[in-house]
Amino acid sequence: MNQVVKKPRLLRSGIVTASATFLSRILGMVRDIAIAQLLGAGLMADVFFFANRIPNFFRRLFAEGAFAQAFVPVLTKTSKEQSSSELRELIAKSAGTLGLIVFVISLIGMLASPVVTAIFGWGWFESWLNDGPDAHKFTQASFLLEITFPYLFFITLTALCSSVLNVHGSFAIPAITPCLLNVVMIGTAYFIAPNFEDPNVILSIGMVVGGVVQLVFQLPFVYKLGLMVLPKWGWHHPGVVRIRTLMIPALFGVSASQLNLLVNTVLASFLATGSISYLYYSDRLLEFPIGIFAVAISTVILPALSRCDFNSEHDKYNKTLDWGVRLVLLLGIPSALGIMALREPILRVIFMRGAFGSEHVLLSAQSLLASVVGLCAIMLVRVLVQGFAAIQDTKTPVRCSMVAIGANIVFNLILVWPLGYVGLALSTALAAFVNAGQLIYLLHKKNIYRISKTSILFIIKALISGIIMAVSVRYVAPEFEAWVQMDTLTSIGYLSALIVGGALVFTSCCLILGIRPRHIKM
Image (cartoon, rainbow, N blue to C red; front, side, top):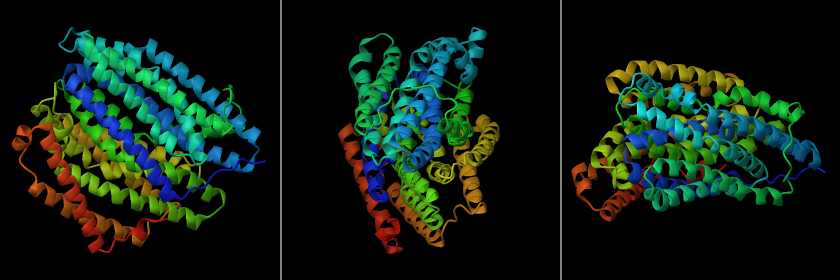
C-alpha cells in the first residue's frame, strides 16, 4: 500500500510556513540583539561570527540546500510509487549515509580547525605567521571553530526530518524548529555568557546545544508518521544513488550566495577590525525577509512542482512556478525598498545598545544599503532553483552558480579596494542578479517555465508602488541624530509607525494600479 501524502493548498501552506518562520525570525532578531549588546562590532564579534559562519555554510550545503532539493523529489516519487516498507528503507539509508558522511566532515572540521581557519580567514593566518596585530584572531577563531563544528551534524539530521515532514504535508513543525535554536542562544547570550570571561566560548557551546534540541524536537513528529527508522549505511541503495547524483552538483547550485559570503569573509579578514561584523549584521537583516518569504514559498512549491512533474502536468507546473515568482517579488520588492529607506533607523532600533554604538550603526548601514540591492534577486533564486530541482535537474543551477561566483570574485576585485567591506556587500548583490538572470533565461530556453505577461505587468506595478512607498517614508523619517537621541521605546514607536505607514502606502498604490487578491491566489 502506497504512502498517502497530503496535498494542502499552496497559499495556505505558504501562510502557515511563513507565520512559523516569522516567529523564528523574530526570535532570531532577538538573538542577534543579545549578541550585538554583548559583543558589539569589534574583535570578539568578528571572531564569533567567523566561527558561526563556517559550519552554517556547510549547513546550507548539506542540510537546507542541496540535500533538500535532491531528497524531496526522490522521496515524493517513492511515496507514490512504492510501498511503505520501501519508503522507510529509503529514509533509513538516506539518514545513515548522509549522517555518517556529515559526522566525518564535522570530525575533520574539529581536528583541522586551524587549517579551516587559515583557508577562510587568510588575512588572520598571515598576521599570525608574521606575529602581526591580528594573530590572536586566528588562534581564537580556530578554537571556537573546534567547538561549533558538531552543530553541522545535528542540524543536517534535523533537515532530513524536516524534508520528510514537508513531503507529508507538515510544514509548520519544520518552520517552528529554528525557534528552539534561537531560544537557546537568547538564553545563553542574556543569562549565561555575560558571567564568563570569554563569552564567545559559551555562545559557541550554546549553538551546538541548540542544534541537539532542534533534532530531538522533530523526532516525535516523524515517529507519529510511522517513519522513525534506524539509520543504515546505503551508499549503493537505488534511492540514495539518485539522491547523491542530484545532490553532488547541487552542493554548489543552491548556495551561490553563501559561497559569495565566504569569499567576502576571506577578503574581510584583510580589512579593518569590525568588517566581518558589519557584513554579518547587514546579512542578518536580509535573512529576515529571505527566511520568512523566500524560504516559505520555495518550501511549499517544491513538493507541488514535483507532483506536477510526476503527473506530467506541464501547464500546472508553469502556473505554480509563476505563482511563486509573482508572490516572492510582491513581498521582496517592498522589503528591499523599505530597508533602503529606513536602514539607519532599523539598525538603531534593533542593535544600538550595550557594546553596539551609533558609529556601528552608520558603518553597518553602509553595508546594508549595498547588500539590500540584491535582496529580490536572492529571493528569486530560491524559487527559480526549485523549478530545476523538481524535475531532478541539479546540474543547470550549478553552472549558473559557478558563473555567479566567478562574477562575484571579479566584482570583489574591482570594488573592494575603493569601497572596502561595502564593496564586498555590493559584489554579492550584483552576483545574485547574475545568478537569477541565468536561471530565468535557461528555464525559458529549456521550455520549463516562461514568465507570463500577467506576472511581468504585476511586477512592474509592485515596483512602482514600492518606489512611491520608499520615497514617502524616507521623506517623513527623522534625521539620524534625532534617532540617536530617542529612548528605545520612542524609537520603536517611530519605526513601527513608519513601517505601518509604508505598508499602507504600498498596498494602496498596488490597489490603485490594479493588483487584486486574486493575482496572488494559486
